[in-house]
Image (cartoon, rainbow, N blue to C red; front, side):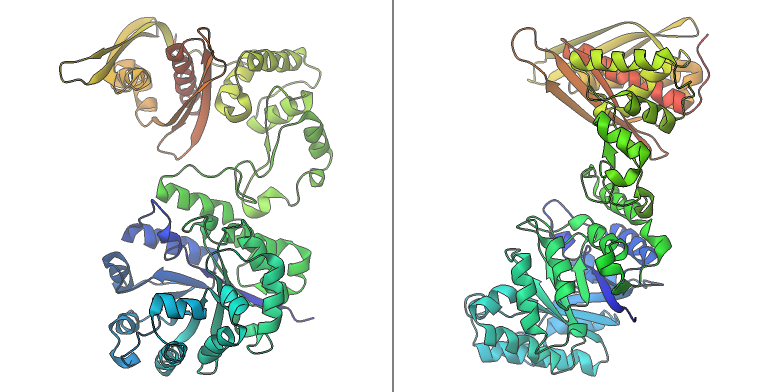
Length: 533
């Protein structure tokens, strides 16, 4: 049986760039393009040449792609001028890309209100723009904006819009759910009508996620007949985002209803790059990854309940719909107050701690975790602190830096500025080292007191100089004058590794210091630093 080809069109650099707070640099766009090309998507929409300086400069670069087709975006010509004399279309032609995707109205309401022209003029804009790029031998795609709303409002006109492009040589007609309000059943029903006028092999889907159905709509569209899917890495996009290709690609490849009937150009070995690709985008955007993303999120294959873990250890398929390694992810056994012995055992194996199955220290560790979580600790999201605790109870861990005492103060100066001061006495090789620093707040001051005096820490200075505090979170666990505070710290280093530590105390400074010291200890341990004498 011959499988039908599904083409993947990535629009992260254009549609994703419309996300609030996202502003790609040229370097960002080049890095993302390379990652997508290495992955093997069919089309990379690089942006809108002529619309802004960044996109214009990007298309002036000589970008070499090995697997993907670089595509320029724009809109159909304006009414009252010819396609040959439209400045917008000229900028797109001058971008010299092999493929072009133009957006045009397909909802008569928008033609009237947004463009202020007649329905006939809009059809002319679509057909003449198509003819221009087909004549220039470009692979031409027409994005039918608001197609599904237009179809529901005026079926005949919406169809005439896409026919204007298709009949004049467009390779792809992309049906856009621009406001994201169409549901999967509607998508299927409408596409089944559309394929009577435009063949499915020439149809694409561009879904937005305003009802949380962008992935479902895209997959439903494939079953209904379309053969191109547009989307973005991690579903990046304005409002609620676009269809998430990090969910769509593995579903097409790994789920039987699709894999037995369809094929994609992305190679099997590249499917395992999906998690890496997802996290690269977050790194470029300086965002915390959404750990709950399907397939590629850090929690996508996390197991917390003891019964679940026992079942997963016997057969992962009980709670995992795929092998996480297929998409480059890993299984994560979470340790918490809901843990059973199986959680602890699995986690110890994962982090490489040797132990005997009947070692009473395992029970001791489990009880210690539950006792600590009763007073406010949560090792659910603090793997580094858990590993340190486990090694101290079950195995051994060197003593690195001891803290003799510390002091923090806050004052307001004559300029009205609030400044925090901190000093701590650290002990390394029996030598006391006084560290002082100031910062915007008490924790920042404590962090600076240690960080800005790293050179004083003798043999540990080289290990700690690339340590960075990425994130700091405080949660008040109960109210009143005796409130308990939980502090979580995320740290990283030049190797790109991130780890999470935790501290709990009635005093926020003490809780912060506990989490900070765990971060230092974990960094020194993982880098095999020598013990303090």
